[in-house]
Image 1: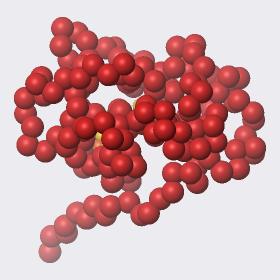
Image 2: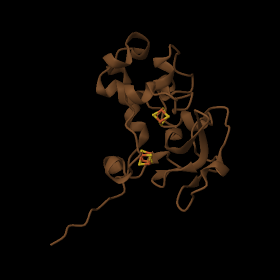
Image 3: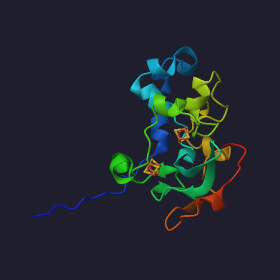
Length: 169
Ligand code: SF4
Ligand code: SF4
C-alpha cells in the first residue's frame, strides 16, 4: 500500500493573536538582547509578516535581485504561508530564518527584515507590529507584499524578466 502525502492548507489563523499580551515580555526586548540570546517566542515575534522573503530571487553579478514572482504557497492577502507546517518538505529552497540565513552573503533578505535590521545594529521600524501592537501595521505601511501586483511563480522560468526594484527590498 502506498501512502499519499497530504498537505492541508493551514488552519484559519488570526495574525493578531501573536501580538496579544505583549506585556508578558520584557519591554523592547529587541533592544536589550542579541538575536542569539532571544527566546523562541521573542524570535518568532520579530517577524513582521511582510512576506517579502517568499518572493523569488536571482543572483546577478554577485547580488541578489528580487522578482515580482512569489512562491506558489504564499497567500498574498494575508502574506502567510499556506503550508507553514510542511514548507520545508514541500519546497526545496524554502529557508528557515536562522542566524546563518540572516548573515549569508550575498544577502537575500529585504532591508526591512527585522532580523537583518537588528543584526546590523538598527532598531525596528515604527510600523513594526511589535511597536504598534497591530499585526496589520506592516500592510498599512505598504511594507508587505499585499496589493503590490506580485504573481505566482507557477510556470515561470525566465525570472530575469521579472526583476523589481522596490525601495523596501
Ligand atoms: S522578510 Fe523577515 S520580517 Fe519579513 S516575513 Fe520574512 S522573515 Fe519575516
Ligand atoms: S513554502 Fe516557504 S517560501 Fe513558500 S510561502 Fe511558505 S514560507 Fe514562503
